[in-house]
Length: 401
Picture 1: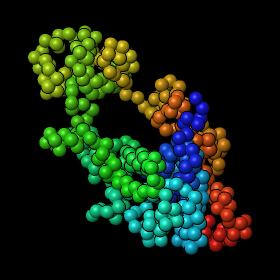
Picture 2: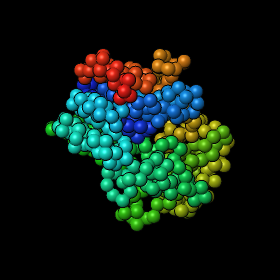
Picture 3: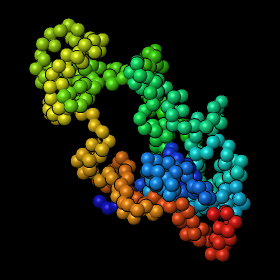
Picture 4: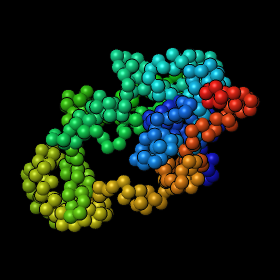
């Protein structure tokens, strides 16, 4: 097994004209899979994410944590796409590229004179991927889209939390991330087409809805209006979150044999004789009373102990953990999931970043370079396109780069 096994997109060039999260995350996946990703950023300011994140000092340096999180392995080229010289440079770059990803509002690239039709004329084999909040057409096409707006519009917030706390936002940018994964998947499919060349229209709204199969289908087929269930699994019981001595534990005793094994292990065989808990449907109807009965025992010991013992007898269980706890756990730490960069440009300390959530033939796909400083690769990329040093300096003096 060599590193080549984890780089199936080696030789593919991707132009990343995206900002903040959905688009950069899509291109982040492609970079880890071996693609050469050239990030085309606005002159003087770059990706907005460069100024976002929990560390104000890094944000002030244009290397905000929000940028660092999904831009490792990319090159940075600054171009003023409103200037004729910037348009020309992008067209030259498109002629050498396989994929272009952008997440402007629909119509922006056309107004710049750089829309899909124009760029496909430069390269008929170009795969052009446009990511937007609501798609390239429809009554909401021109609306600005942020993750929380899409979470609300998709129905996600309406079913997150319990009846007292909903609607609630999912605790990370779900819509941006799912939109980015959808875009990366579609690009990979288009790269595998017998004839290259496609226009991919990714709607974050539709990407999220597509992941809500059970919820949507319960409505469409079962006529059940989705509602917030909190930490309870609406399809079975006891299946949800239970309090232990120190922390909560998730238990999914979805099968009858799991339910029986659970109560026997807890020393509560008496519950097997209670008519209200006889069947799955009975247990679902009486789930909160049942949870209270089980917690009389679960609260006597730590969550991790219960999780270990229950899994050993075939009852799926897992303690509710914090992000730091799971990142340091051997299950994650032992599988080459985190990358460390000791020499990230513009930073005075090493940084650790996540890789992608897949291994190929036992190898974790990975990039080798840290997130780039703004415009770090402009000269190299333009030189490769045939621009002379004099032309590059003129472009710099005129604000094109």
